[in-house]
Image 1 (cartoon, rainbow, N blue to C red):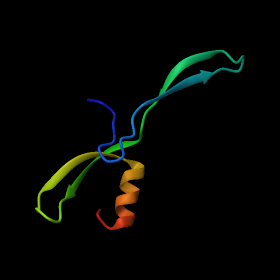
Image 2 (image 1 turned 90 degrees about the horizontal axis):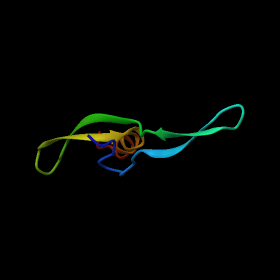
Image 3 (image 1 turned 30 degrees about the horizontal axis):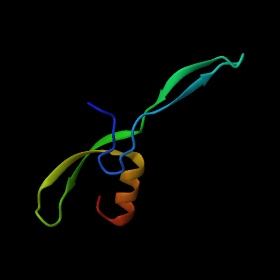
Image 4 (image 1 turned 45 degrees about the horizontal axis):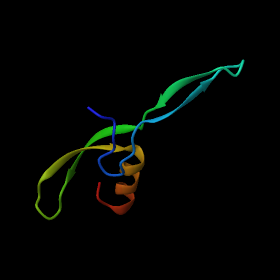
Length: 65
């Protein structure tokens, strides 16, 4: 399963670990994802989405969650 937010499209980023001696090795930055059940107000169906923390915060602000 891919680590992608189903709403915002956030996905894994890449970068470097930098040691004290400034040696660089590759690393990954994973998005902060959670499974959430969201009810569609029009159809009444419940959708199970994998959302980032930022997407959940936005949905709560808009009154959807």
